[in-house]
Length: 294
Image 1 (cartoon, rainbow, N blue to C red):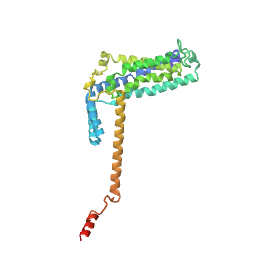
Image 2: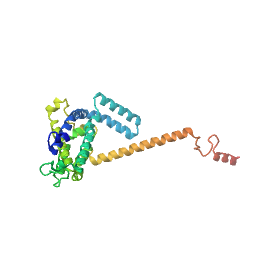
Image 3: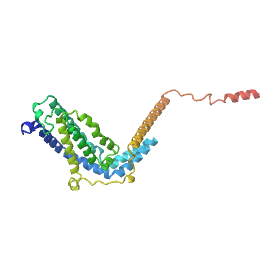
Image 4: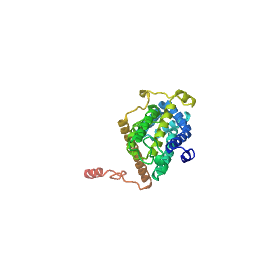
């Protein structure tokens, strides 16, 4: 950004936007890899969910052997289909350090402050070192983020990543971040808004059939919810069942741990007396009865 501002004589807001565009263009190949993998996972979703359902049922029964067998079956299925859930996270993992770097760098430049940034903005945000007094940039930031989430994270892609519940969190994110963005400097918000606009255009661009065909991204198959082995149960029921499954898993693990401890204790310690009288001798009541008869 300093090179763009000093050597190219660009104002600071333009330097921030151009710098953001350059960085996002360099990351575009990672976006293509993620899109290809997401499409493959979505198209193979019924097969994956069928195995996952068997694995979940085995875990709920406490059948660890069958659960492990189905887990191995799922890994083999994904290997044959060339699927990798981690590829869907390539873009977020790559963007996180870049976002932090831009955020920390622009915040430091605003706090110094750099004198030229006092007049490096435009329109109503001329001073990039202070927050937006009209709250327009925070509103634009939240709005573009919400629009990008709504357009980009469609139901098929969330289902392909097995993150059906994640859509509720993603849709609530713009409302959560708004109270924090109103205190950010205009320089940070210019970067954030420009990054959101690039993401939005990128998502819309990659939805075009010709573009997807050019980059060899498979066409997304729309699965009927009633035909999927694992159906969307809604937010409340989904959270409830997830919590129940976690408790069952914890209880089974605790039960197994106690059984292993008891087994080791029984094998190493002395034989525990579990009878009231010597089983090799007649019961006391029988002996007393014989003495009375005599």
